[in-house]
Image (cartoon, rainbow, N blue to C red):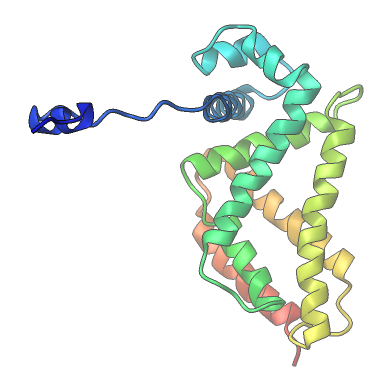
Length: 219
C-alpha cells in the first residue's frame, strides 16, 4: 500500500511539518515585535531619544524595517499608543464580566491597579509618553491629547451609563468624574514609578475602590 509524504513522516516519527505562514502573518508578527521593542525602549528611557533604527535592531530585524513599516517616528507613535491601549483593553475584556455602570467602572479600576510584569511595562511606557507630551515643542502632544480623550471617553461612558441605570448618583458629572478617576489612577502609577516599586499598589487599589463606592454609588 502506498503512503503519502505526510503518512511517511508519521511512520518515521518525524515531527509534523509546519504550515508555511502567509505574508500577512509574517507582517503581523514583525509589527508586534517592533511595537513590543518600542514599548520596552520607551518604558526604559522615554520617547525623545528613541530612533527607528534602534527599534528595528531591538526587535531583531534590520535598522530600516521600522521606517519601512511605520514611515516615520510619528507613525510609530500612533501605532504604539494604539498598541498600548489595545493591550490594556484586552486585559479589561478578559476580566470577569461586570454589570454596566458602577460595577464596570470598579472592574476597570481593579484591572488598572492590578498589573505587573509586561502589563506594568505597558503602564510605564504610557506614563513616559504622557510626560514627554508636556515638554515644549514635543512631537507627541497632539496625538496623545487625542489618545487621552479616547480613554477619558471610555470611563465617562461607564459613569454616564451608571447614572442612567441608577447605580451611580444622579449628580455625578460623567466628564469630571472620568477626569478624577484617570487622574488618580495615573497618579498612583506615577508614584509607583518614582518610588521604584516601594508603594503597595494592591492596598491603594482596595482603598480607592472603597472610596469610589462611597462617592459614586447611588443611595
